[in-house]
Length: 565
Image (cartoon, rainbow, N blue to C red; front, top):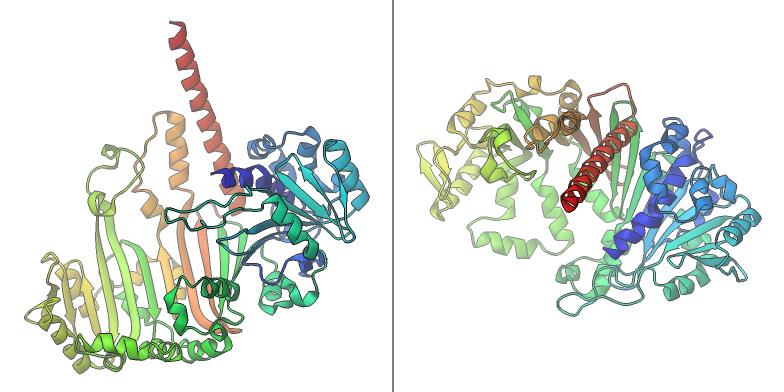
């Protein structure tokens, strides 16, 4: 909790500073101060101020209650003013802001915020005037100062680094082992880190990684970079994961997750690229070109679809991955004990599969459910459907026969039911499709092909379902309407109505290999299509805060009145 308070106290105000740097148009050039981020950083976050400048009005933000709440965390009045325009304190008002974390997750990790420097002398005068108790320490490559005992700043003519300080002690878990991110940003370790930080060569900088620079040049509003190669090294070095004995470091060479988020009118868009090593990318690319069979989705027997996930996942690809990891023999040994093998499964199915949740509704009226929590098994009724395309019906029959023999399934005519499930659910097949549904009639109607669920889905989502190997759809409005309303006042009820109607649905699609990465794109759609999605989120947050504060003040008045009486 102490660490979270530190993050709230210092990183959030710095983020507000970042959001204020919104003047010039985007140029998609990687800023000079990015070279101070180490190549082995585990996570790097970016706020592209130039991109946000086209979408947000800073004057509206700095006049908001949200901004004033952020300012409360700053004790010094000049620091509060600096949050409105960081150029007043010597930092670059046109700078991209970076956040990064590096270090062993079980040792002393380093978390840092980087902002470009514009006027070093002005920044130092700000430190001296605003924090007279702080001493500016001079080193050959940089200067530094301890700010309010909880923030350490270091800078040169190019960049200012900010480290929110944590405890120097090392907390442990119940087994006596160091807990995750222990001794977060201890002062001694930060000073030790800075000795090399300002001498970082280009070869040892994050800008030497092409996948990272490609993400930055894309110009997303916000981007997040996770270095899986470095995470593998940490995991392999710890000796905690026995599976690492089967996975060579080369399999994670250049592996990373690059995510970009953009706030547009009426939607928030996301792009994700999971970069694979060259060896694994060759395998993935071999099997990731076929789109999922959209007919599997269209056959769903419902006009009330809450969630759909479909994927064309070739069993042959899994086989090749297992062979690469030298795990194929072990897996086949386990399958042999059940009377089958990977080859049998690979020849039985094509790889297309779909899972859907439909007809979801509360078992009891929403106003009779207390609290905000929902137990899916206790509070909601729903139907589900799972289906896959058949490649070899004889192999499918053999697999089903093994399941019956082993007591997993019970055969009843041309249908199967789970041995320990209710009798309403059924598994049925024909020569092309195998389907398992929560209702027997749903499975039968699915095979008949009479239903057309695709026509009930949003047009944009349905188009993506017909042209990608992987698709996901979630009806957010439908799901959130199931949340019980705990409102006790008209204002709270109005707010809850706005919350429930803020978003419509989310979708994600992709799955093909692009530039050595599994490429995915998605959108979160809002009801209001005319206003920027981030502005809508901030506006709703401010309304929630006002109601919360009003409710707290009313409670205080009632307590005080009771005390007087």
